[in-house]
Amino acid sequence: MPADASFEDTNPSVRPAEIVRVKRGETTILQDAVAAEEPLEIQLVYGAAANRKVKSISITMRTPGNDDELAAGFLMTEGVVRDATHIASIGTPSAAKTAPPNRTDGRQVALPTGLRSQVIRVELSPEVEVSMSTLERNFYTTSSCGVCGKASLTALRTLCPLPQHDNFMIRSDILSTLPQQLQPVQAAFKKTGGLHAASLFTADGLLYSVREDVGRHNAVDKLLGEAFLQDAIPLRNHLLLLSGRASFELLQKAVMGGIPMVAAIGAPSSLAIEVAREFSITLVGFLRPESFNIYSAPHRVLGLSGTPYRC
Image 1 (cartoon, rainbow, N blue to C red):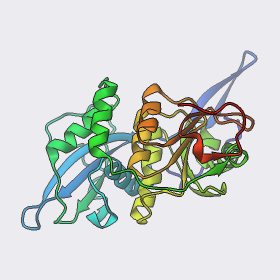
Image 2: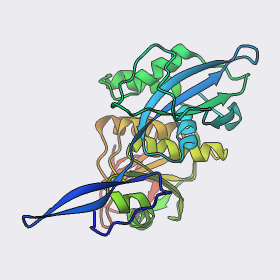
Image 3: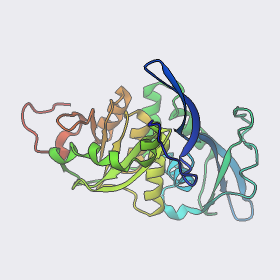
Image 4: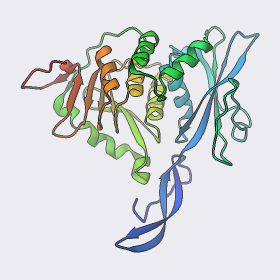
C-alpha cells in the first residue's frame, strides 16, 4: 500500500501495521494498513420456550463488521433457517468480547495466544425445529476438508430449495462493465489490498449491495444475510459478482439464495461448474472488459454471436 495510507479508527475492517518498505535496496519504516482478521463465534439459541438451548455452531475467522448479516447469511445458506421470521433476534451476549470460545459440542478451537473470539448469538423463534445431527452433517460435508465432490453434491441436493423460475437476463456489454463498477466501492480493499468482495447487481448493471471480508465465503454470507434479513430472498433478479475465484461453497450459497447467475473475476473450480450445471445457474469466469468464459446456462447472457455453447 502507499506510504501515505490513512487510517480510520472507526473502521473495523482496517488495522495499522508498522512495516519496513524496501525499494531499490533502500529501507524505510512506515505505517501501513492491513485487513483485520478476528475470530467470530456463532451461537444458536433454539428449542421450545420452556426448554431453550444455547449451542456454539461455528467459529470463523472474519473481518469485523456486519456480524449480524454474516450470522444470518451463514444460517440461511446452511439451511438452518428458511425465512427471516425464523430469527427472533441477533445480538452480542453480555461479556461476549471477553469470554473465551465456549463450544457445547465438545470440540476445541485453537486460537493464537491472547486472541479470544467475539460472539454473535442468533435466537430462533420457539416454533423453529432444528436437527443438530443434520446441521453438523451439513457443516462437515460443505466444508473445505477433503470431502469428495459426489458427497458434497448429494448433500446440496438434499439441502437446497426447489429450483425457482426466473427471467433474469443481462446484455454481454453490461456484464463486462461490472468489475469496473465494483472497484470504486471496495473501500477497505483500497486501503489494504487484502479483502475479497461480493456484490449484487441488477440486469441493468446497477449495484444493489456489496460486502468485503478476508474470507470470500464470509463476504457472500454478509451479502446474502443482509438480503435475508430484509426478506429479499430468493434473489431471482440479481447477479452475484465475486472479486476472486468461484468455488463449490460459493455456488452452494448462490443456490440457497435463489441467485440465477454468478460471475467471477477469477477462475471457477470444477465442482463449482458441476453445481452451476446441476442447478441451472449461469456461471461466468475470468470476467474482463473485452472477454469472459461461460461455463453453464449461457441463455441468460444476451448479445452473443458465433459458435453455440453446448455445455
